[in-house]
Length: 509
Image (cartoon, rainbow, N blue to C red; front, top):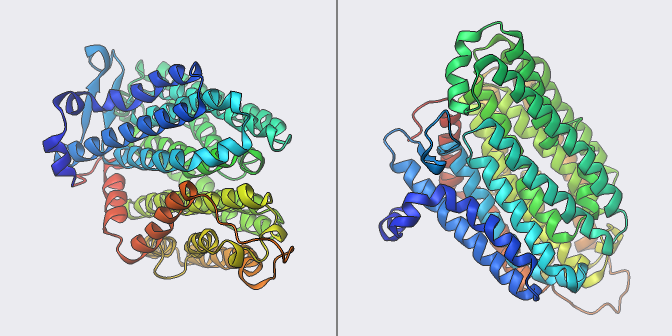
């Protein structure tokens, strides 16, 4: 299919896909802000995300067809290391494809929830902020410049704070959640840019490939080691790595339903991509301080997140908070895979990243349907919904089983790959943590499923009411993807393995 796309795509798209993927949504955002109609803003947002997906598919094909597995784009025809370079390989082409795909599904699903939760006069501004956030996330994934990455990180973050705060129309607690997110996000960005400053003082360049080429000659340089530490903390905060995750539960719980769904499937994933990029492309696993980071920092934090946040999820009564703490626990799985420091470990972490985006996207879509039709998010509100909204709740159940890791689901396959990577390194004890965390997932997701399918409705007269079709279609696309990729893993696992090889600088294809 991608070969056919490359053969039929217009020449301007083939030449400028890296720039257009970011520029199209970014330039359309101001237009949306001045439109009088929210519905028109929604339709233009769908077009923008579809165009970004078109460009992402082109880039995946070009990367696979490239003899070196890399597509470069010199912005303004200024070559590296002087100018800003957009650089696409198997690692970030996978992330771009993920963000664009989720962006399309999220935008289609958004209209019923935005109409219900956001004042009508703010609809154009809401979609304008969304496109800025979407462009920022794509920019983080595609840029080949360390400072430009900071710029895009802040573009996406500042618009995200606005999107979270707009949930105040439904729940006033969205305002302190957005403020907390702003403070923590600013701290993360500050740590990151300080780290980049240290690297610039040591290497004299901001180009990621140029920095990577110069670092091997700077062994023992204190500025390099300080820069590494600041960057890891900054990106760890953005990725909600335990214990730097305190902004996430409230942000996910009180945001507009569409914002929660989109952020859970993309924002932390893009930050994790940036972390992997610096760990394996800029710095190298051969560096002594990075090996120590894997062994004494990232692996313990990943294991702690899996267990601690799973326990916290068990004791939540609100479904959105349960899923929020679960998200931090799942980030722990990804960090555990990365901390193994091998191609197999990183590919397992990236495979789980892809699957978790599908899982949480489906789960939060289903929760949005409940918020829209029954106005509740507690486990008690979900009682009996398996009878009153069977299509919505069956989609939720499929994604929940995938989150637990039931065989023949995508979640099982990525946990299996993580187990293989751990056993290859003799880390059988870490597999015990994975199994125990999955057992805790049985408990906290089982409580919700038990309420949905085995308890009577709180109000027996509550009429049968499904979520709108615009919500059900993307929900079931993601739910069926969890089943399909649980049976045949060729596409997502192939993308993850190629991405891991690219991160290590190996031949991906």
